[in-house]
Structures are given as C-alpha cells and as structure tokens.
Image (cartoon, rainbow, N blue to C red; front, side, top):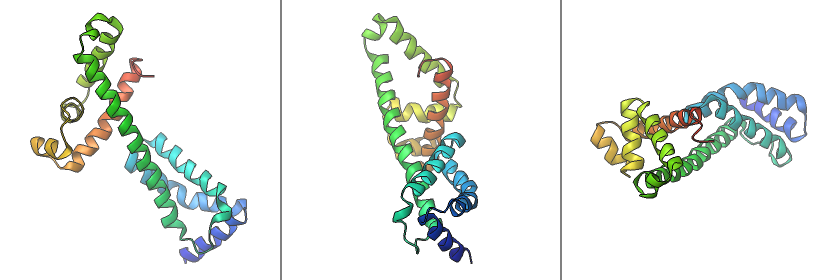
Length: 183
C-alpha cells in the first residue's frame, strides 16, 4: 500500500504539485532526521542535511521517474550527504590537528604568544573531554595511530573508536568555539 502511495507522490512531485511534496515531506522528514542524526551525531546538522535533500528533490523533480522507489531513494540521499559531511569534516579536522601538533612542536610556537595561547587552549580543551575520548583523539591525531591499533590498545571495537573520534571532534570544536579559539 505504501509503495503505491509513494508512486502517487512521485508523480505529484514530478508535476510540481505542492500538496504531494508536502505530503512527502511530512511522511519522511522525522524518520530521515533521526537517521541522519544517527550518522552525524548533531541534530541541527542532521536537520540541515535532510532539508537540503528535500530541496534538491524539488529542484530535480522533473527528472524523477514514476517508478522511483521513494523511500530507498531519500534514505540513500540522506545517507550519502551525511557521510559526505563526515568525510569533509574529517579531512578538515585531520589537517587542523596536524597544524596544531606542528604548532605545539615547533620552536616558533614559543616565540609567538598567540600561537602558544592557541596550543594551550587546545590542550586545555582536550583535558575537558572524557578520558577515553581524549585518549582516542590523542592516539589518532597526535600519535597518528590507526583505528585498528587504537582499538586493540584500548580493548574496544573499531566502531567505538570511530564513534569516539566523531563525538570527540564535535565536543572539542564546541569547547574551542566557547574559548573563541576556532571561528
């Protein structure tokens, strides 16, 4: 029954029917929000991702096929956008941590009070994280260890390592924003 309703929604969306799009939005928004939040661990970010997917579907409405399976289509779109965000922020954070590590170990950090202050803020923020999360972040970004090695050393699963890294980076970013170290 739901598949037939979804096909009607696809036809309506394809024909730029606002009521069909609104029904589609109300049918899937909440579950997609929960799904995305499970990936990115941030409700506001998940909301942005889901809304972006809905906007994109409206933009490409005329390219949809009537037999497009709507539920798998939107879940795949939200999953891909969520994972792309994680990939992009992971690259950003890796470079940021490497930069901070370089600041910490360079002789010029002692010469420049502002850089030294930033390094101190980062270390202070790390100290405010839960011990396991702090250890995982330190092992990954400062010691440059692999997920598997961290998992074996701490006797946790690789998925736990990934989760701790994601949540740790989010918490660290918030702590640093609170100290106005990262803008």
